[in-house]
Length: 193
Image (cartoon, rainbow, N blue to C red; front, side, top):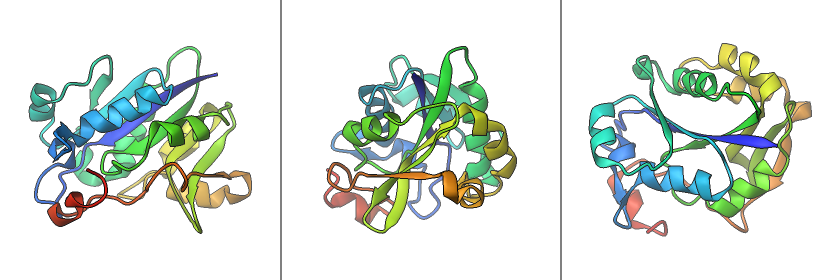
């Protein structure tokens, strides 16, 4: 089963004060870490969606074989980036897309592999962290049109997953990953380094 990795890295990072794709953590850009996490987790292709400061990210980030696409509608929120990324993963043989956000440096390749192991064209899978559900999120190809239609503003796949909650499988990942996001400069000096 071929699983595409989809890294959403288009936001301006208003609370952070700069696009999070360009934030350095442990000597590497968050966008580099995210793409590598997906690649090491077995995703192929890896698609990176850029928006804010896209030219600067392209110039500074070492993204290897990742497919880099621009979301011209990035100011409208994460929903348009998700739709843009799903469209870019529409390739022969790709049966599911595994979605990761750029500001989750504690998500590991082990978590990616664990969620991706449930890939199928009709899969809806979320990582579980205790009582919370989070990323990575696996979307089977049969759901891409519905997810794209429901992804508006800054909510991504959440409304679609809520509407199909009975079909969503949750894979515990709290033993191999940390789903805390980096929203401010103060937060990135914690356990993620």
